[in-house]
Length: 139
Image (cartoon, rainbow, N blue to C red; front, side, top):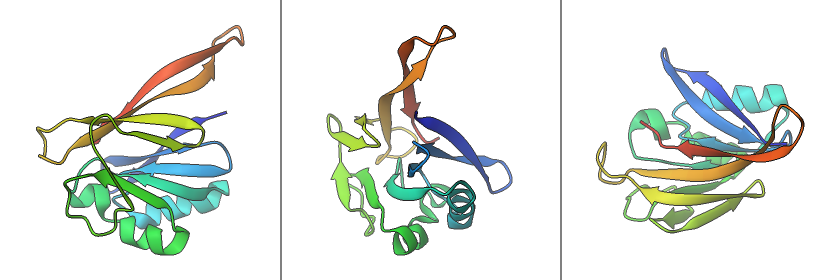
């Protein structure tokens, strides 16, 4: 079962964690301490980081998390971020946690802004399987 959880950070923000109770993917980890505390509290292994854009409240914790957990870090193909392991653009697909994330370029907030779209397996009220669309778009 896949879970999506908000991790409180800063005074008014959330970082997003997608996990399967063993491995986790973090979206825009602006604060390494908040993420590390959450991962430790829930016994999760960080396998990937998805970056939507270059603003400090979205990337501030990446270097520390990479040094501690060695996740694969994904971000925009034309970004100058030195810590990216895999540069992606519109039409690319990422496979993490047995999920397929489609990459969408969404320039506007920043020129290097991307979003990640996936379908999360869930169950309806009767216990029947269904897919829930999820978009991780940063700001």
